Amino acid sequence: MRGTVYLVGAGPGAPDLLTLRAAGLLARADVVFHDALIPSETLALATRAQKIAVGKRCGRHSTAQRFINKRLVDAATKYEVIVRLKGGDPMLFGRAQEEIAALEAAGVAYEVVPGITAALAAAAQLRTSLTQRGRVRSFAFATPRAGDGEDVNRWIDGFRGADAGAIYMGLCCAPAIADALIGAGRAPSTPVAIVVDASLPNAQTHYTTLAGLPAFARRDIGGAALLLVGPQFHARTAASAGDAVDLRALAQAG
Image (cartoon, rainbow, N blue to C red):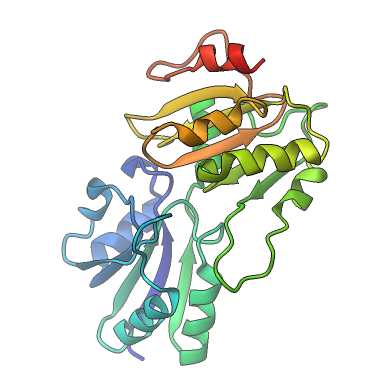
């Protein structure tokens, strides 16, 4: 094997939130295998690379993981610098471990380059800390998604012991999420912030509660949505510029 595969976090979307290391690797890359929703401005940094889309989207045609694994291994026999560009951070809901296992089995050299995950970008957009002294001391990261043939997803167990949390890839099953959290003891009035396209110019914020969350599954919000659930995620008096604060939904749900 001649090349090294770099599992690189592209961050939440804004190109200027890439790490310097990530930007440098993109500039050196011979080939970039990239997720869906990676902005064209970020891909443009890979000026000399062949760019291959291998993204996965809920409800749409997706590249099989075993095929991605094989492409990475094959690329290492042809190229020096191979970048596997993942949205957010590779090690959080990025299926990095499957790719790491394939690379290790084939004897391919690899490195992992962290990125900013969506929950951190969403917190920055909301100007609301994920943890708060004396109030929110634990925070859960979860997704309700489960692939065919996978074990039953027990994501709710993590939320039972946490003060607040982020739910990735969950808007499409908002009614089930609300039912599960209320069934686990959360009050229907628990605040929820829905952050869409965090860090990007077209970012949106919608505030509601667990009781009002199911209604958002029927809305065409567009973009990548993250759910933040916890006592701190209520509508702020002074919303940040550009936020689409859904105060009407909050009032109706409350």
